[in-house]
Length: 329
Length: 254
Image (cartoon, rainbow over all chains, first blue to last red):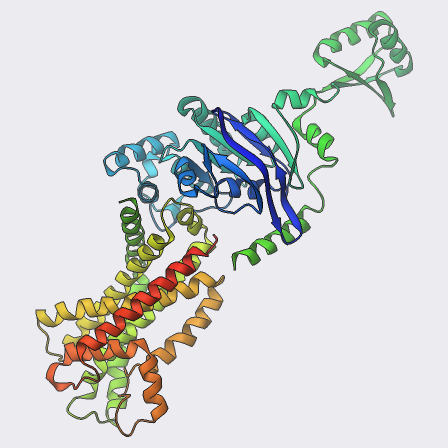
């Protein structure tokens, strides 16, 4: 069994709203699996079901071989969770928070001390371990939460929007831990995020999710590769002649003009640029500027979801949290 | 074993949080003293309890009141935990909801017990005769009283989303339980209206206050019920509240 997580028609419905719609995914052992999508796409709901916090409306899922509904206790022992919102006790010290977690997850008393030290070292909080959490910065709290999720050595670590609201240095820091975790501890990581760069940097595979469904699932490279290619934007003293030359000598058929800019779409932009410049030189065309635009995940996202992070996100989020609140009562 | 360790760790957390909140501990001295000194002086001048000084009659009642108010107040920890997200960490942990409830209940009861002991120590100031036997018999009774009361607070808090609502409901429950318990005035006797006597019998704290008086005041107090009846009723109340509490916690989402 190499699939650590497998879902089968996993669905969560609130009244008539399908937050997660017949989801089928499988996550391999040892990979970092990214769930990317706008707010309200169903990422957190999916993760909540996999973490046994929410019961699926229909369909099933297994985590580490255990059914999330029937064997929720075993699932909980196999997973570590870093929630989207903070979930630490800020009136306790870092060490006390970790110790509490170790006790709640049944880590044997004889190895608790050592485990806690290891984790503190990993997230570089050894020197602050005995300070109250309320004196920690946002990034330090986040690091402690990630550390806490590892105390009981879970098979799968769920990270729900791990770097929201953190400064760039801290984000970079946290990304490093996550990479390290995967390499050193052979842990499987499920990451939800709405940051393209985060998904791109960390994930082995990315599932783009929208309206409760997976729109596309692939490695970051292949996802970017599905776009037709790189775009080279050129400004010269005679775009018209340049266009003819490019078609005739280099076979670049996919070209169009936008104002004074000639846009050429090619499979490999880096290789094409010097040849374009050379060709222009030979024909006495003066190139004022030339810019290479490689596709990024943002473009992929746009391509598949037919829009940027949606305008109606705020409205939808509001409605969704109201539904959550009702469900809690 | 895991469950026991879970209970222990949740208990420890509540106690640590309570002890670290120094301002609360200091403030908690003031209110009982006001009752025992100011209220007792004025009210005691006009009310006659046969065979006993009013201040002495009031003393076990104020211990009961302190247990009640602290116990109910501690329910707020559930709302804090929900608000600040820590409840999620507890609820997804691989331990049962019964253990979660018991751990929290024991922790909050310990806090209420500490407050009760502070008031108990005031007995020296007003000349209540004590010895170690009184202390040792008061302790388990106080603990038994707090279990049920803390459970009420936790159960209510598990249903309530906001601090404001909890405050309002808490007052709504505290005062009737306090007034009907016989802490301030006797609720039995020919001259007490029938409805008041009846309502008092429904108040679990009545049995607690009666039991505390029996132990603290000794022969100068004529108990309403024998001690063992009082303790049995409180015990049954505790068990029922713990069962309801476990149910309330098991339906709680984060």
